[in-house]
Length: 177
Image: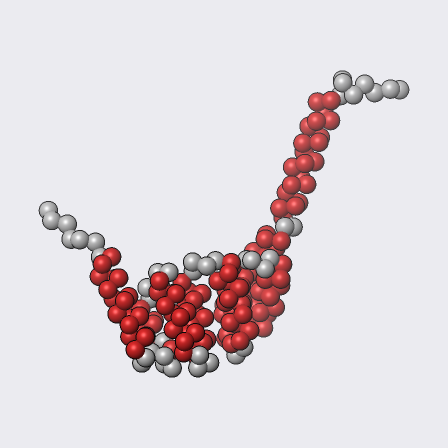
């Protein structure tokens, strides 16, 4: 029996379309960024539960899966810092900054680690970058003990003053009714 493909082409096209959809979904589901996202969510949850070792393993795997995934790199930096590994954390924060160069909190964390390590110039440069990018949690900046090695320097005071000036310029004018 010979099949005439012209009589059966609609079912073949439909079957091909369905197969393409399933293949596309499978590729999306197993794509590195999807896997990295899942691992990152699990790592963050483990960290919140206090299991920093498990969090570090999951976040490391997420960063390895997708090296440019900002959330994996940033959160791995936080976990490594909490585990007492500041230099490894610093590497992750720099990788996070490369992936998302406009995130002010990343530069704030970089500044904190440099300050604790006694690298005043690097700490202040990172804090300046953080403020330039919009960091505005100045109460945190004022009371953060990790910044004690640099918070009495003239450059730190200048940063503070620059933030204050910017804050006053950004206040909306009071409307008159």
